[in-house]
Image (cartoon, rainbow, N blue to C red):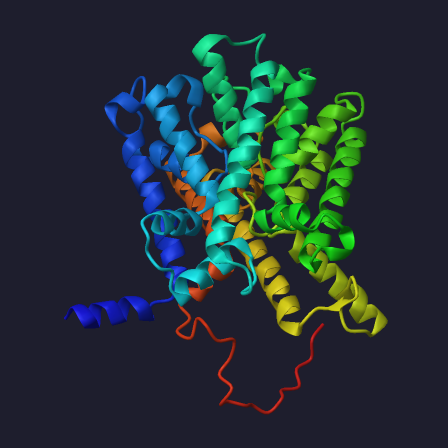
Length: 438
């Protein structure tokens, strides 16, 4: 009996464990936030589930004001959920197993490689330790800078708590804050805070593999193609967002806040400006940047910047009649296919969810619903100010969108794939089909 159970467990797709792991974190967090001493005046189940989902999925959207709704215990729970969500279930689980002396199997190493984007030749245990260290170092540095940035607004234990929470939230691209109902709008002139938050968000959104590659090799020529793509696309998108917001909101925003908001769409969610007052052009640009998101294997979400890069390279290559290549390396057809599939599935999910919410609440502006839905999918947390006015059904839909955005749409599909460790059945060959496209 035990042997059959063990065999059944091993035969399951490892992707299922990612799904169940994140779901377990969310439900556990929801249960803790529902405890009487976690809130100041109680909270409904759907709101507790929404906040827990948003924290684990490092989104930042909230249907309640964290600073006044939750007690110190509740805020600690949310901070832990953000940290666990940022590192990811697989990273946390494998780290604990390593500390307990368990030997990692083939499927375990496969999961780590899929989650962190590592290659087979890397030492999995060493990589997990580096991920933990990178997070700890970045958050510690951010914490001490926050102590200086918040010194005029808080003092004593409150200063320490706010600085620590904010550092964890920023590096993990969560966008949660415990300083009030207006995010960082009241601190839009705090240069040190905006710069520190932006840098923490950008570094967290680069991905652990990129950070490790940069500090290990130090030279551009030695960087892997993935690192080169991320370090090329990230500044380009930051520049696009900065200039776009600055000129679109001409006279209402300075360059620093334009840069800050550009960095936040990479998928953090702090806001130094009121998106509800932005014009449609600014919101559409924000939606595009959020939809693209950060890099794979990072604390950010979205369809990922590498996906956009591969699609653009494939488009240019198609026009020129050449195979898709960049940095003197050719992209495999499966890489292009995965990029297109991610883009298509993401678009379908966002469009469908947004349409349903618009149907459920026709009083809301479509552009605001689109911003909320894209923000949920890309685990950003930016809002046009309609989160608190959503119905229970709309909140449930956004919970599902946040969850799918965090675990990844391809991961969700791979759960149903029996041959999870094979790309195709080599014993089957079909005659090529001629299909008219376009």
